[in-house]
Length: 81
Image (tube, rainbow, N blue to C red):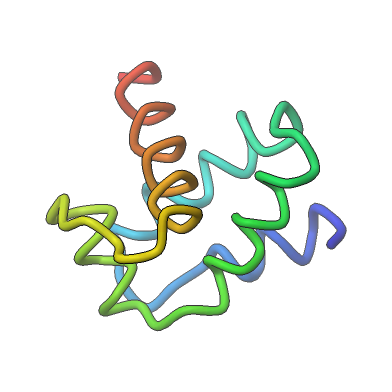
């Protein structure tokens, strides 16, 4: 997926998600390997409520691959603060 589409898909209905996902695309997405880029793209297909639980509330995803990309996003945010 091209970067402009990723930026658009990262615009969510919740400000908290926007503040996590958009900077991630801008600063970190290009450094991901192809597998993790695909995991991120798949993550963007999910509902905001689910993303909120994982990214903001810290709940664990049942799927190990989903949890992997959630962890990468959360770690990138911690390093950027």
